[in-house]
Image 1 (cartoon, rainbow, N blue to C red):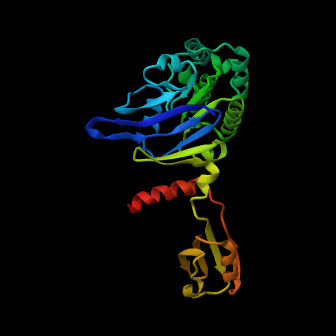
Image 2: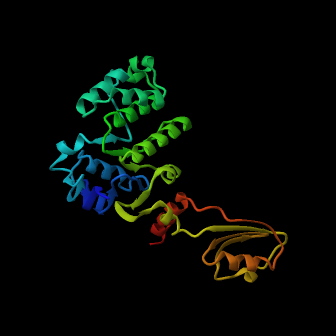
Image 3: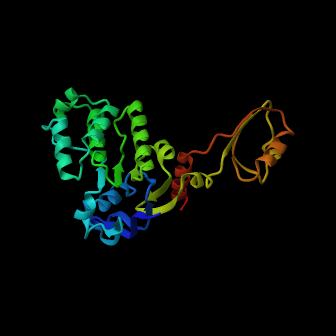
Length: 301
C-alpha cells in the first residue's frame, strides 16, 4: 500500500521560538481515514497548514503522493480537497457562485456527482441562489464540504469537518467519507470529537505539545488503556480485603468501589464471589479514555 502522506522531522517554530509542531514523523496510507488528535494548541492545525503549504516548515519536510509538499505544491494541490476549520468564503457570493469558483480552480468535471452531493446535504437551488452571508453556520459548512469533495480528489485534508453540522448531517458526512474511502480515497482528518474519530477512522495519531506521542490502528490503540470496573456491594467491605494484582483500586466510597483492571478479569470475579455484590459493570474503553490517559501522563511528568 502506497504512502500518500509522509512527514520527516517536520518542525515549525513561530515567533519567540513558540512550538507549532516539532520533529513530527508520520505516514498516511492510501485508502485509509487517518485521525489526528490533540488538545487545543497541540499542533493539529499547524500540521495541516504545513501539509497544504499555507505555511512553511522551519525544518524537516512533508511528502504528498511521494512529492515534496513545498517544491511540488502546484502539482499536488489539484488532487487535494482541503477543508479548513474556519471557512470564510466570499460572503457576497451565492452558494452556487462559490462552488463554481472552486470548480474552476480544480480539476472537477463531473456535474452529476456535484448534484448528488447537493442532494445528500439537502441544499436546494433556492439555497444555492442565496448569498453566503445569509447562510447559517451549518449551511455554510455544508457548502464547504461539497467544494472539498466535488472534484473527486485523491486526498482529503480536513480540520474539524463536522463543526456546525446537526446530527443528521454528521451521519451523512460519515457515510460520504466511508464511500470515498471505499473508492480508494485517502483522508487526513483532525477533530476534537473523539467519538467521531473512533467511528470513522482506521488509524489515529495523538499529538501533544507539538510532538507525536502515538500512532496506531484504532482498535490497537484501545488496548493501551485499562478498563474500569465499578462494583456496588450490599454492605460496606474493608478495602484491604479487596486488594489484588488483578486490579488497582481507584476509590472506595461506602459500598461503592471504582477500580482499573490490571490483570485477568477472571481473578476479579473469583475475588468478588466472596462478597455480597449488588451490581457490577465494566464500561467499554473508548477513544476518549485513551486520549485522556496520554494527557494524564503529561501532568505527571
